[in-house]
Image (cartoon, rainbow over all chains, first blue to last red; front, side):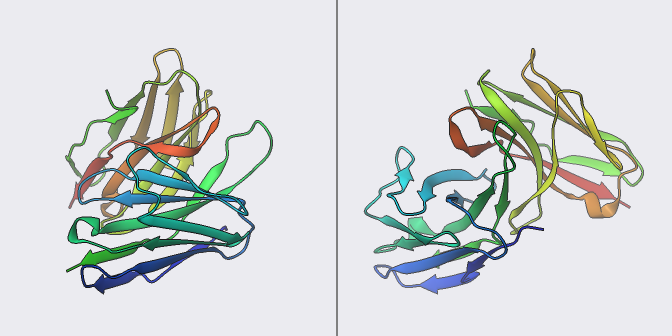
Amino acid sequence: GAVVSQHPSRVICKSGTSVKIECRSLDFQATTMFWYRQFPKQSLMLMATSNEGSKATYEQGVEKDKFLINHASLTLSTLTVTSAHPEDSSFYICSARMLQGAGVSDTQYFGPGTRLTVL
Amino acid sequence: RKEVEQDPGPFNVPEGATVAFNCTYSNSASQSFFWYRQDCRKEPKLLMSVYSSGNEDGRFTAQLNRASQYISLLIRDSKLSDSATYLCVVGYTGRRALTFGSGTRLQVQP
């Protein structure tokens, strides 16, 4: 089956530092990856859509200068949380889309998530 | 109004019980439908896709009613290992990301 990895799985950092999270599709190519954020007892909220070789598309309310996304290859997307603050503490999850065919519903496979705690 | 709405639960049921979850979506242009399962502090995992004709996978049966914009998941013979949060997920035409419901929590008790 399709496997998506995320690194690190957990990070604790001081306020003001930057944190980079990597998302890799291990056994398939992903032209599109998605970054979600989930606060406790809430649903996943889409932050941005990452397209290989082009700029990411951010959802309304998500600061593109704070959450830097780079999709450098067909198997790797990175999310950098710049100048992290305690309110950025959350569970960050990436997913990669596996296209199953034109006009057919596509499936997304999720990475295991990164739990960020900003002190 | 949320794009995808679910009863948050929790649903507390005994082992062996049958339990049903419902979900409604607001965008009639929705194109793809899924149920995901999320365990505590873990990522969502695809449980099953949902098709208009209805589909079954072992103890799990999913139904879609496009006219009512309603999706359901039925779990028969509940196991302790079924305890999790079940997420109703919808994909929209022209938007390749998925939209998640807030999830319904199931606790199966011995």
